Length: 151
Image 1 (cartoon, rainbow, N blue to C red):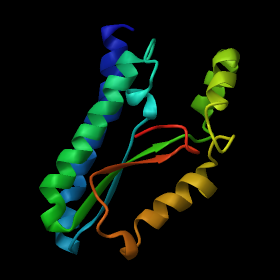
Image 2: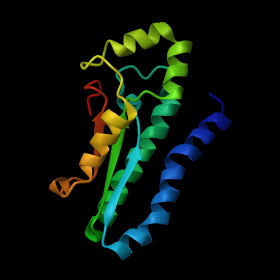
Image 3: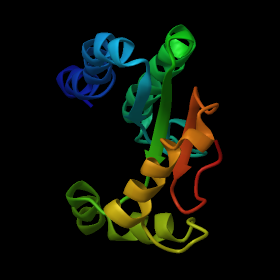
Protein backbone atom coordinates (compact mmCIF):
# COMPACT_ATOMS: atom_id res chain seq x y z
CA UNK A 1 0.00 0.00 0.00
CA UNK A 2 1.28 3.44 -0.84
CA UNK A 3 1.66 6.19 1.74
CA UNK A 4 -1.01 8.13 -0.14
CA UNK A 5 -3.52 5.27 0.08
CA UNK A 6 -2.79 4.80 3.77
CA UNK A 7 -3.31 8.50 4.45
CA UNK A 8 -6.54 8.51 2.43
CA UNK A 9 -7.83 5.69 4.64
CA UNK A 10 -6.78 7.56 7.76
CA UNK A 11 -8.52 10.74 6.56
CA UNK A 12 -11.78 8.93 5.74
CA UNK A 13 -11.64 6.83 8.93
CA UNK A 14 -10.25 8.07 12.25
CA UNK A 15 -9.76 11.68 11.20
CA UNK A 16 -13.31 11.96 9.82
CA UNK A 17 -14.71 10.38 13.00
CA UNK A 18 -12.63 12.74 15.14
CA UNK A 19 -13.82 15.80 13.24
CA UNK A 20 -17.48 14.76 13.36
CA UNK A 21 -17.33 14.01 17.09
CA UNK A 22 -15.86 17.48 17.71
CA UNK A 23 -18.66 19.05 15.65
CA UNK A 24 -21.52 17.28 17.42
CA UNK A 25 -20.08 17.51 20.96
CA UNK A 26 -21.33 21.04 21.78
CA UNK A 27 -24.79 20.25 20.41
CA UNK A 28 -24.99 17.10 22.53
CA UNK A 29 -23.97 19.02 25.63
CA UNK A 30 -26.73 21.58 24.96
CA UNK A 31 -29.36 18.86 24.65
CA UNK A 32 -28.17 16.99 27.76
CA UNK A 33 -26.31 14.10 26.15
CA UNK A 34 -26.49 11.76 23.23
CA UNK A 35 -25.16 8.74 21.44
CA UNK A 36 -22.27 8.48 18.98
CA UNK A 37 -21.54 5.45 16.83
CA UNK A 38 -18.23 5.04 15.07
CA UNK A 39 -17.78 2.23 12.59
CA UNK A 40 -14.84 -0.13 12.46
CA UNK A 41 -14.00 -3.61 11.31
CA UNK A 42 -12.91 -6.85 12.88
CA UNK A 43 -9.85 -6.81 10.62
CA UNK A 44 -7.85 -5.10 13.38
CA UNK A 45 -8.16 -8.23 15.50
CA UNK A 46 -8.06 -10.81 12.70
CA UNK A 47 -6.09 -13.94 13.36
CA UNK A 48 -4.49 -13.54 9.91
CA UNK A 49 -3.59 -9.91 9.27
CA UNK A 50 -1.65 -10.64 6.08
CA UNK A 51 -2.50 -7.95 3.52
CA UNK A 52 -4.69 -6.11 6.04
CA UNK A 53 -2.12 -4.37 8.24
CA UNK A 54 -2.74 -0.80 7.09
CA UNK A 55 -6.52 -1.21 7.00
CA UNK A 56 -6.46 -2.81 10.46
CA UNK A 57 -4.32 0.03 11.84
CA UNK A 58 -6.77 2.59 10.48
CA UNK A 59 -9.77 0.79 11.98
CA UNK A 60 -8.04 0.34 15.34
CA UNK A 61 -7.41 4.09 15.34
CA UNK A 62 -11.16 4.67 15.21
CA UNK A 63 -11.64 2.29 18.14
CA UNK A 64 -9.04 4.20 20.16
CA UNK A 65 -10.82 7.51 19.51
CA UNK A 66 -14.13 5.97 20.51
CA UNK A 67 -12.69 4.76 23.81
CA UNK A 68 -11.19 8.17 24.55
CA UNK A 69 -14.43 10.03 23.77
CA UNK A 70 -16.47 7.60 25.89
CA UNK A 71 -14.12 8.19 28.81
CA UNK A 72 -13.91 11.96 28.43
CA UNK A 73 -17.58 12.63 27.63
CA UNK A 74 -19.35 10.07 29.82
CA UNK A 75 -19.86 12.65 32.56
CA UNK A 76 -21.75 14.75 30.02
CA UNK A 77 -24.19 11.90 29.38
CA UNK A 78 -22.67 11.17 25.97
CA UNK A 79 -22.28 7.50 25.15
CA UNK A 80 -19.86 6.43 22.46
CA UNK A 81 -19.78 2.98 20.87
CA UNK A 82 -17.97 1.37 18.01
CA UNK A 83 -19.92 -0.93 15.71
CA UNK A 84 -18.09 -3.55 13.67
CA UNK A 85 -20.60 -4.63 11.03
CA UNK A 86 -20.55 -7.10 8.20
CA UNK A 87 -23.13 -5.65 5.88
CA UNK A 88 -24.15 -6.02 2.27
CA UNK A 89 -22.51 -2.99 0.69
CA UNK A 90 -21.34 -2.08 -2.77
CA UNK A 91 -17.72 -2.26 -1.54
CA UNK A 92 -18.27 -5.77 -0.16
CA UNK A 93 -19.90 -6.90 -3.39
CA UNK A 94 -16.91 -5.57 -5.34
CA UNK A 95 -14.51 -7.37 -3.00
CA UNK A 96 -16.45 -10.62 -3.44
CA UNK A 97 -16.27 -10.26 -7.23
CA UNK A 98 -12.53 -9.58 -7.10
CA UNK A 99 -11.71 -12.27 -4.49
CA UNK A 100 -14.19 -15.15 -4.88
CA UNK A 101 -11.98 -17.77 -3.20
CA UNK A 102 -11.15 -15.59 -0.22
CA UNK A 103 -14.79 -14.50 0.01
CA UNK A 104 -16.00 -18.10 0.20
CA UNK A 105 -13.56 -18.82 3.02
CA UNK A 106 -14.63 -15.64 4.80
CA UNK A 107 -18.33 -16.53 4.62
CA UNK A 108 -17.58 -19.97 6.07
CA UNK A 109 -16.32 -18.28 9.25
CA UNK A 110 -19.66 -16.57 9.98
CA UNK A 111 -21.67 -18.77 12.36
CA UNK A 112 -25.02 -17.31 11.26
CA UNK A 113 -24.01 -18.09 7.67
CA UNK A 114 -24.75 -14.77 5.97
CA UNK A 115 -23.72 -11.14 5.68
CA UNK A 116 -25.92 -8.67 7.54
CA UNK A 117 -28.62 -6.71 5.77
CA UNK A 118 -28.00 -2.97 6.27
CA UNK A 119 -31.47 -1.95 7.47
CA UNK A 120 -32.76 -5.11 9.07
CA UNK A 121 -29.64 -6.37 10.82
CA UNK A 122 -27.31 -3.41 11.29
CA UNK A 123 -29.82 -0.54 11.44
CA UNK A 124 -32.26 -2.18 13.85
CA UNK A 125 -29.48 -3.32 16.18
CA UNK A 126 -27.98 0.18 16.16
CA UNK A 127 -31.37 1.71 16.99
CA UNK A 128 -31.80 -0.78 19.84
CA UNK A 129 -28.44 0.30 21.31
CA UNK A 130 -29.83 3.84 21.67
CA UNK A 131 -32.67 2.79 23.96
CA UNK A 132 -32.73 3.94 27.56
CA UNK A 133 -32.60 0.30 28.66
CA UNK A 134 -28.96 0.29 27.51
CA UNK A 135 -27.93 3.71 28.83
CA UNK A 136 -25.09 2.22 30.90
CA UNK A 137 -23.38 0.82 27.79
CA UNK A 138 -20.50 2.89 26.45
CA UNK A 139 -16.85 2.44 25.43
CA UNK A 140 -17.44 -0.89 23.72
CA UNK A 141 -17.13 -2.43 20.30
CA UNK A 142 -20.33 -4.14 19.23
CA UNK A 143 -19.79 -6.80 16.57
CA UNK A 144 -22.77 -6.96 14.23
CA UNK A 145 -21.20 -9.70 12.18
CA UNK A 146 -23.17 -12.88 12.65
CA UNK A 147 -20.77 -14.13 15.33
CA UNK A 148 -17.61 -14.06 13.21
CA UNK A 149 -15.32 -11.74 15.21
CA UNK A 150 -13.84 -12.41 18.60
CA UNK A 151 -13.75 -9.02 20.32
